[in-house]
Image (cartoon, rainbow, N blue to C red):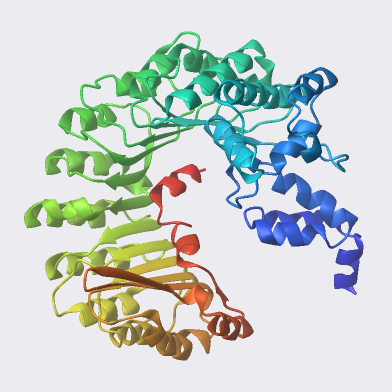
Length: 522
């Protein structure tokens, strides 16, 4: 009875919560559209909230947007006489009004891919003006529909000249219509090149009235300083989260001054930044207000004495910690000291991403996982560079140390196939929502040999919800890649046990791609 009520539409609030759960699962959302009118009405806004970033390869949304242009713009569009047959004759919804997330840098590439998909070839003089017209027309369309954007992104650190030209034109149109972005945007993301007009970027940021989160990447730090110190900035009483990604802090000596004037700043995230030296860390230590350093992903190790002072002050707030392959360049004593400090001061880590290089570090990592077990939810371990014979012991310890439930586990291994059995046996009390395994080897090893162990210890006991397995084999100077997702019979068998097999690339980049992770920080 309750199911029939849901599908008949008697519980729209509950239906909306169900559909919203699938907001990033576009194939499921498309299926929801076909259920009935209510489901369609609830699913459509989720499908159209960020059309320029949906990874489906379908750019037909461009022509649907063009259909919604005003009469004046349509008359100009008709002068090109090349896309009349492509424009739909009718639309059921006001699709432009649903956009919530706009990445300015992706507008022109989407237009180009749309033109390519329809084999529309224009001469060079005409195509430049045509694309400029479409770029500007789409922005005007959003402005006219008074859309309620919550995120505006500009990622153009490697933009080629023509795309930069379109971006500057778009920024000009936006600044001519300040109400478009002044009241509702709570999240701004920037990664820009020197060819982007920084004055326009500063104006755009200073217009914000309710900005809560801002992200800076690559060479945007000078812009960050100028805008947050500007008397015209409205960020001081709204901004609570700052994310720095790939920023070089060399020569920056006024972070404490900037942070102090941000009255509601709560969290700072450092993701593979550079020059985290004593001078930089001292600026954090000098702060009189509690700033929560929630993410620390490092490519380099600061002086241990300074790092300990930082972790003494902020370590209890740290939720996300990791280091990459470059960590191997540092001496054994330095690595040990770093991990000992993390174990000592950081009890609340939820996401841990690390590589194992030797037994010494492995013993410390086991202690770290045990120490944060009560909060750990996302774990990525790369053992592909570990060449010792004790890998069975590592996997055994890992299996025994894991919490009873974990959202995400990614393992990258260079092992004998039956070594994976050691881990699966010893983690028998753990439920994985998402389990990702990659085998990297120069031997004849592949996921097919691993699958029987997965079935025995995972599938039959229903210990996982989403699964991905891939092997990468180097043989005779050739690279062979195999993915469990491509074995359709195996996929069906797992599905009978309510386990969904996904492609490795889809599930792996879900969390362990730190750059995607940075986009999902609250």
